[in-house]
Image 1 (cartoon, one colour):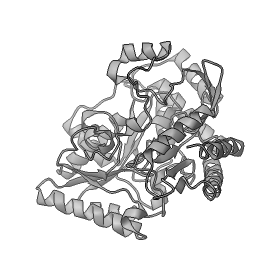
Image 2 (cartoon, rainbow, N blue to C red; image 1 turned 135 degrees about the vertical axis):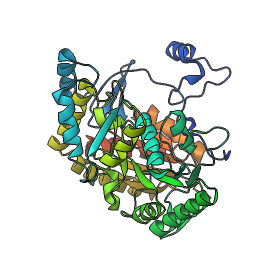
Image 3 (tube, one colour; image 1 turned 180 degrees about the horizontal axis):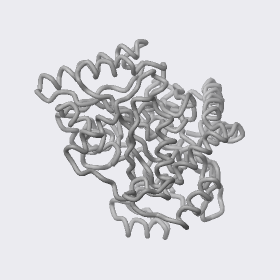
Image 4 (cartoon, rainbow, N blue to C red; image 1 turned 90 degrees about the vertical axis):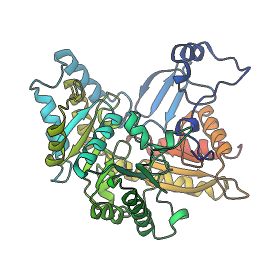
Length: 439
């Protein structure tokens, strides 16, 4: 692992230092979870309730949430809450019985995808969905090689960790996993589409030379862990064509960009004019209720079932399906895709305007309600990880929750619930104005 690359969790995590006295709540957490405990911010926050775009802490303080994309339609949305309450009061069982809400949700979800993608299988986590996608791709192609971006994160199972370079603290992914730089003009110049495709072609050739072959190109379609790279629309198409020409599949990880976040339809891949072979889903599907899934063509899912007796006992259970159906209804009824488009543009315009007087703010990128803001050293223009950490914590102190991403550990990652308002953005811009004058 390149020592200059910070593992993804380290960018945001609380670090217990020698001589620092932890609060009783933090001490309890660390004692119970040991070194597996992950907490955010220099001073972790104990949360007790939430609504919409706001979280409330145990001390009564309210925070604007610009980080949590899991409650995609808003924390504790009443329509989703009612759907979950009603279903859990009636029935919640594994999915090897006929339950109408499960089939109804599957049909409604599949109706949002291009026609070839007509089968879904549900799981409880995005990690499971990506693990399954890797298995299908390798079965379908007879190859083992997977191409991902250098800062990718795709989950926590053993197989999926291997295709998540950003999780490594030591070592590196196995030889069957090849990495390409994120679609950043600072690497590829103005021809993002051509440069990214050529990088993928280089790794295809390397995998062929090694006798491994290319099973799939797997990307998060907004490249969130790499630092958020959304533009120009369509740049993915040549890389996808190159993978298909080599006999591989294209897996679109929509765990973070999916369900309307990019403001241009439900799915991030649609901005690029491509149809994936496999789509993986997670986190935002149930607005916080554990629900994930994989959508693909029948012949690809059929390959898996020919070789394995695959099932997921509680994936897509009736309560999860009720939550998922309610999320789709809220997105449509409240116009949240359009809201993501319009409020997201308003947010980026506001940050860009601020950058004229705050030289620590570099490039501002994104689509819909997914935005990346580079924090830089004003003198060199290079990434400034220390200033980013300080800014993230300063915003927390002013009641705004935000995260960090990127190989340089210097990208503010903004991915709020889709119900974010312009008034919420104004609160953030005012806080950012104040905090960037102090770090």
